[in-house]
Image (cartoon, rainbow, N blue to C red; front, side, top):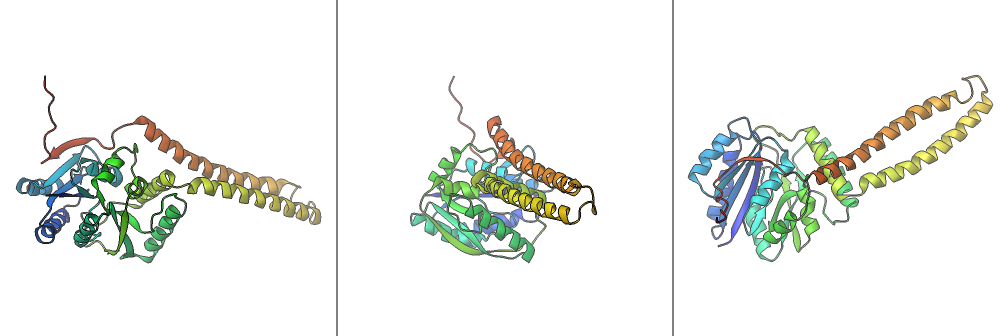
Length: 320
């Protein structure tokens, strides 16, 4: 019997984890009866009743496993660590506790996987969120896919069912800040997409705040695209052209209005100082993002530090 692993990261999701567990269990009991279930909840050091509820569930259902992190390592590293701990023949990389990605698609994903597809990815064709957030996300994913060498349709997230071969290939990618939604495509293989509606959260509120979203977005751009470097190159040419144009205009104005506005060159110096100072700070920050990415790689620290595992098999002991 084949095993399907489902990874659910959670942080302060006491209102949702039981609903998520029940939704997955019912799908396996009805439409996926021929498969063994492995549901891994990765708790990011929750400080509400999330872990208590998960322990109650795991005590009654050995198919439920829990990884408890020593602290909050963010959603990307937390989810990736759960994927690396999975043992299924196929792995659903991300099943959110709030069920915004519909678990009802799992049987269709499994059917497509059994048909020979190593990567079955969901495409968020419709998003139940504000027009502003929808526009920002669409713009980001278009930049991400436009400047990446990987062919990824806009709207693809971590809601993907991948074959064990893909998981083992991902294991060889040394990345201190893994961006899984692109990493799977980098591994290659036969793949197919399934469009769906990304639903509005029904209970609680998202813990993935604006700062974390910006951090994750920058990580994706730095890791999988040439967008920042190409933008810097283009901006350098444009700024140079604008500077030459401004110098010509300022020269003409200086001849026409000689000494009427200010001493010749004063306006140019003031504008140029502030303008190029801001430009230099911007590009120093962009370079800093790459330096931080390199720094994170060379340190070679674990993706997360775990405090406890529940319902996992004990590690094999070596003989004396």
